[in-house]
Length: 221
Length: 209
Image (cartoon, rainbow over the protein chains, first blue to last red):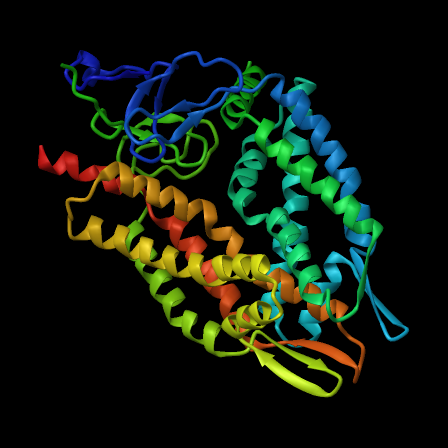
């Protein structure tokens, strides 16, 4: 990593060199260096991860997104777990939790749960599918930058892993009260969680943006 | 020795969405949108401090009902008990579920409080130009960004419990208004972390020159 110097004659810049980057958190101007695949380049001033090149990021992301979308339907429609107490049995799916909250009048909380556990993770998968399929097939679309931008905005609001921890806590809370039977939906959900977590770690945002830029340039030609 | 320069000192803007560098040509310049991702470009997040203050203060106000009001009411064989976040943790402790009690305590009580204190320190230190270590403050900011989402844990637990435990008069769990307030606190602090522009921590160097 090299520091750019304000004493250089770069102040009379005509165009910005392609290998220049700035740190997200401290605005330090840096020259990009080649990093081995999988290794993070850190900002020398504030330790912020700048980029992390990934092998075959488009193909791997595409494959994982398709798997994720296949798992999404059973994970959300099949019961996550059942509870039996004195001969009665109840079961719940992910969306039912939100539905019950809605019926009890907590509309805002119901929406929060619905969005964080279903709507946003689903939108993220669709957006990444759209972008990675286009990049893999070397097609271009004017919508590519918008799709990937919205993926970036939605990223932190999908909370599948927090939901998973919620399932574990709920199990412990109910343990003494009634007997709990895990449902098929739970296995699908765990698989979905693994796939989406792997997808976000193998997705090289920096590389995706560069490819989107190239795809758009090709289109203009 | 070379002095490190920031993008701003070089008249460059880094797109906050995709990281592309572009020339800063002022507000009326044609590169108001990022040349790559078309997002609005700003040298620094617009009104970062005031927006973060507003969200943080709202979160702090809502933190009171979030802890005082019951998040759920558990009825078990006729006897009902309204649980707030804190009594929920205490109940778990009494039942001997120490690890889960610890998880809930960290996610629902410790993290929201520490997050609000951290944001408060960041805001005050930037505004009043406190001489704190920049690297440490940036690290603190990243921690706030990273752990915020985990506070949603309790909300998801409530959603699962109310859907599962509905055995009429035998056992029933009903959600309470505390959940709404608590969910809002989590969302507001997450938004406050996003509106805070970490580059403001380092910017004072420019004015010191």
